[in-house]
Length: 425
Ligand code: ATP
Ligand code: MG
Image (cartoon, helix red, strand yellow):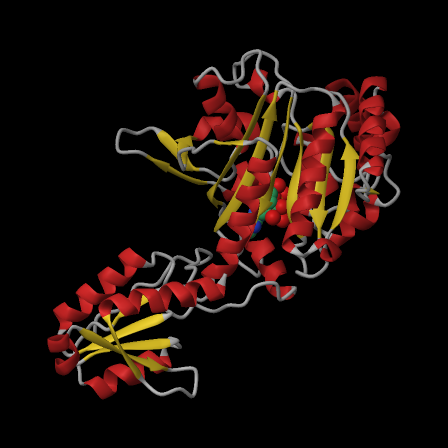
């Protein structure tokens, strides 16, 4: 027997019974972003590897061990995008969207990271990302966070998420903090996990987001980044907190929140939930004022976030917000004359575009076709027998009501469904 080919581990199919919850989430997100005046940008899935190395940073989980990198046929190194910010900055620069302008952009699509697959962590996953450019003041940081808080309300999951907030300060402030952190950790080097020992030399801030429990215990008494903030970053952070408080958005300060990418400065935040086990972050972001310049553009303030769609779908499931049902058709057309059935279905779709009409295809006797109509959950079966066809009429069988079958002319049929639809609205 031929061996079956399966999907790649960590890359999921989303089946028809699961897509209603995805569609619900996607439509709420689109509505929200248009409400706030964000424009959609569609970006390629593959980019030059250097784009991610230069933006995310060489000594990060993503670049060190998670990228899907391969050589193109002409020997160039390409990578399946692990995130969208770098591509968004690249595209913005390439098309002159960033120079001396204010932009509010968003994108969605699959991202790829070679991670250990588990609940809420996959190798192909989906993000909605939001990036803003040209605004350095804390009001835009606040707007982004207030917008996400509105989304949780719209989705009915506000009770399941909390906001964690931190400030990473300026480059200078971080350098001073780094020195203090390294001095502290050097004295406790033996208690750190292997990755952290290595990062102590290469990128010590990364030690703060180690997931190792031993390392986390050591970090409890480590110096706090917030004590090293420069005056400007401190002021920015204070204003942001005041704006969030004024808008009624609750937050917790987490001074160890550094985010797994190199490009952040000042504000960083994560929306976390305890409903999904270890994979608790559903939305994460921050300010990256240095990135545009780092990728060859003019210095441009920027702040954004990305949310993990699979984790949000899991949360919506946990909250029971959407029923997993493929919607049943309103009408199921049954006939032994396939052409007559197809034409009747077409004319109904012309007359009543919002009616869900399914035509029985695949042949078979009336009885079998009617059973199918019932099994599938249709409300009406439209019956076209020989006598109906010759007299230009249609039989209607009520599959969900105790009501006698009726026979209508084709014109009466349209009025009948117009009334049904009007009653549904
Ligand atoms: P984590 O700490 O969980 O690894 P991260 O800091 O690597 O997350 P980001 O790069 O900030 O994640 O991506 C933003 C969001 O995308 C995350 O908060 C999460 O919701 C989602 N996400 C990241 N990696 C994955 C993955 N492998 N599978 C599913 N969702 C993911
Ligand atoms: Mg990660």
